[in-house]
Image 1: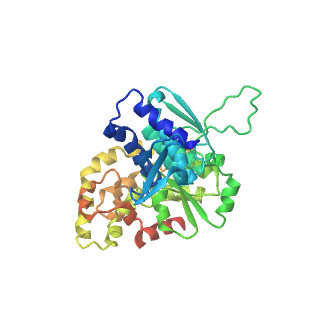
Image 2: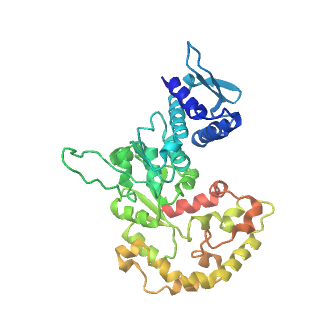
Length: 392
């Protein structure tokens, strides 16, 4: 049955009313599908299945779709269930792309036979590549990868239809994506805590969980949320987790008061995650021959002083949005002189607490050293800094 569907899918849109231009067929159909297969499964053309050829149907047999992986050729029938699921989905999107304009597309359980990482990558590829901007995709799923993608996407919503009585009218609202409870659509919290029994679950900002988990801190797992607001909303809601947020423009005394009120709420000692990555002591640990720590430190000071008036002018407005202060105004200092005084010095350990290395530092100075985040987070210095914060 599958081969007949593929036969029809490949033949009808390619050949019906069109000339059989081989190059155009490849560019319009085969190349995009092969690219998506790599994006979803990972690897490259030598390690991931790619469409190689199509054998015509005969009076006694259906057509055959042949894939290659490296030097090996594989008939579609011999692919794994997960590979078949992805191929069928992509073929349907490719051949029906003209029909999907201004459409609502319903697909049930499109995550079947896929592991969590593949679920997320499949949905991302379909949404970003194959769904027109004028269309919507609706899919029924309990897949953790789908829920995680939807939670992180500003254009996605999550509806929980469990335990509704549909014999009476219902108003269904999207789940609040800033709550960790949204994952309970896929996995009950009790089960999650049971799986992670004996481990510390740390909720952090943005996509930083990917890099924190590279540290392999014993018995510690990091999970990312959108921003510091989402982190703190979950701090108040669930003491079962540990939380880690950027420092931003919090004073030393404010951090002390917040920690006292919420012992499971940890705060970086520097402005943000990137301040640890690009700290002179961290880069020094990579032992790059051409790197001169003293020259680099002087560059940080220079750039800080060049931007000091702009940054201090935004200080008050930036602090107005901290969720901790909205919850309890007593956590907020009346004066911010300590921040200004620290920022005006050239003492790294004072001003660096408030100098945003992600947005305010021009990293062209470092471009010659080929520094990746994967390298920078795996130094002994970086790991020790994060462990010290979590253990306070």
